[in-house]
Image (cartoon, rainbow, N blue to C red; front, side, top):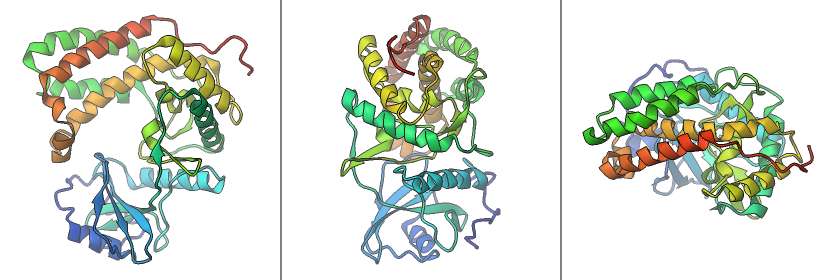
Length: 342
C-alpha cells in the first residue's frame, strides 16, 4: 500500500483496533520509509496512540507514533504536523515529525504512522513560581506563532464536545457503580448545566497546543521543549495556560498565574478577562477525562493502566471532585494583581 501523504484509503472512517499492530508489522512499516531499527521497540507512555522508541542504524534515537484508527482524519493530522513545523521555523522548541519519502504521515497495512526525533529531558516541577515565568515566556512564544495562522480541520474547544458528548458517554457506561448513580448524577447534571452556559464567543480564538500541561514539556540543557500536539485545537489562549496552576490554595494559584502571565506578556498580549474561564475549563477537563476513559475502556491497554477506573473508590472521589468544582464555579474568578502592567 502506498505511504504517500495524500493517500486517502485509510482515514478517520477506518474503524479497527491496535490488535494487528505486531512488532513485525511495526518493523516492516518503518522499513517501508527507509528506517531500520537496530534496537528493540520500547513502548512509551501513550494510551491514545501507540508510541515506540528505538535506535536506528544511524545510531540515533527515534520515536514511531502509530495513530489510533478512527480518531483523526488525515487532514487533521497533517494540520498538526504543519503547526509544529511552523514553530520550529520560528525557533520555538517543539517536536515535529520527520519528512521521510517526502511525507510526514505514512500508511502501512491500514495503520497510519509518523516518525519523530527522540527528545530527552526531565519533567518540570509543578508550582515553581520562577519556573512558571519561564514557562509563560515559552507559551507566549508558541502563541505568537499560533496567531499568525488558523486551523481549518482541527477541532474547536466547545461545551458540546467537552461536556455534552462526555455526558452521553457517561450515561452509557456500566462502570459507574449502581449505588453511586444517584449521588453522581445529582452533582454531574447541575455542574454540566452550568458549564454548558460558558460562552467563548466574546474571546479571541486561536491555534493552541490544546493539552498544554507540565507532562507535555521537557527540560533539557536549560531548554523547555513542547511535545505531543495530538490535541491541537482552536480556542481561547488561557486553555494553554491554566493547567500550569498547581495546588488547591487560592493564594498560591494566584501567585502562579501572576508569574505565568508575566512571562507570557513578554511575547503575547493576554486578555485579562480570560481568567474567568479557568474554573469552567477545569470543569470541562474533569468531565471529559472520565468520558475519555469510559470510551477507551475496551482497549486492554487502558484497563492495565487505569485499573482504578472500575473501582468504587474512584467514583466516590469523582463525586467529591465534581462537588468541589461546582463550588469553585460559584467563587469569583482568579484575577491578576491590580498593578500588573498590560
